Image (cartoon, rainbow, N blue to C red; front, side, top):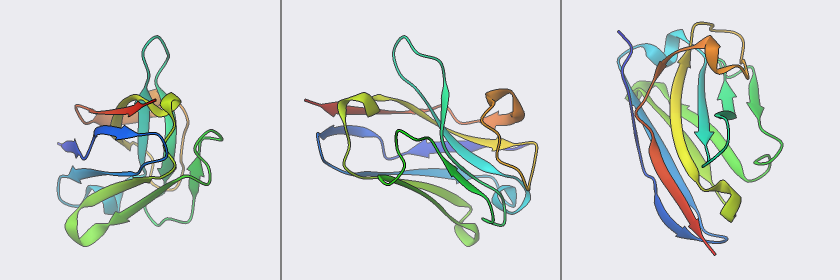
Length: 125
């Protein structure tokens, strides 16, 4: 069973930075594509960034491209999301998720089979 636990969220000022971490059960990052999703109040859950297990494929939402970076440390079984130049519209609950695929990054939440509990990111204006 895949288990994912996010951390690193919090309150940050406009233009600030945060790094989210996702601690995954052993071997998860080596076996599946991984992604960060977010759900803002009143909005649907959307993919922020995703990567195939080999990092050959990396995708970002247009709204975060150039500001966010997804990365992993397979040895530590940890997925990261570095968030820079944060904006109020980045305020959301951020979720780590693992896909049923390994070499493909899907934008569809239904293609992800395991989810963390989420971590709140609030960008203050």
